[in-house]
Image (cartoon, rainbow, N blue to C red; front, side, top):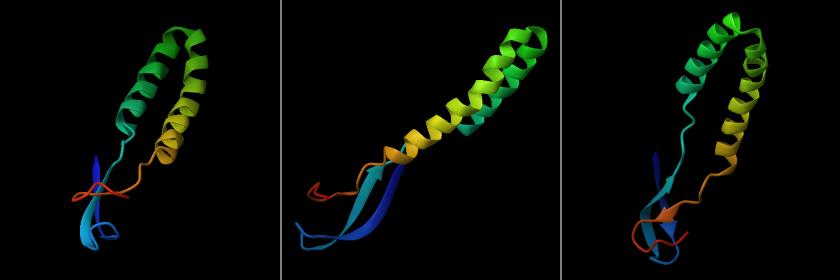
Length: 80
């Protein structure tokens, strides 16, 4: 997902459009996978371990997304 904002670029010496890439966490996929794991855990009791651990993986995925934000870059010169 592209995020855009208008900022003043020191290199171009004027306001320009700045963009950055942002990865979106697939929350719906995580939720569907959790539901499938619960159904599997009803049949195979050992799968409850995965049901317990998967929310931590989901949280880790969300936290990695927060810390991997790239800086905005000018669309004219590419500077920060």
